[in-house]
Length: 193
Ligand code: GLN
Image (cartoon, rainbow, N blue to C red; front, side, top):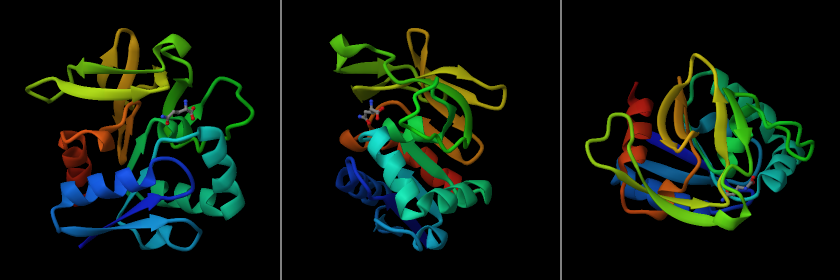
């Protein structure tokens, strides 16, 4: 049975727990991960949105950084959203307050949409989706550059806002805040693989 761990240091943890429970429909459990020692027991992980500076510091302090890196390397599927997307990248353009985990071959632009577009919604054309996906962006970062091994799934203008590399699914928006579970379904398929 699937056991999904939501990294519970800061950010919209409870929304992610509820959204994942909805998507799983009883076919697995969701736990919150506030400290080291639990990550190795999970078959899938979620890195929520929030403040990447804070989450980055707390990951290091809690000893979870190495556990996360080991899980990613072992092929455990990871859903990274918004601040989580910043954290899984390998390059955030010289912002010393955040230590990215370097799990995905992407470069981040943390202020991709500027302060005047703090939050907005957009209908995305997503690779493999028949109908547009209505996405909620909140002070969203974007992927400015993606390596050859990264599958780009959606863009807003030039900015990449959804991408996949092997066991990592990274989204600049908040799939946990809408009823549309299509990105969660992709993640659950990754678990079965
Ligand atoms: N801009 C935030 C950061 O860099 C992310 C915002 C969010 O997760 N909603 O941490």
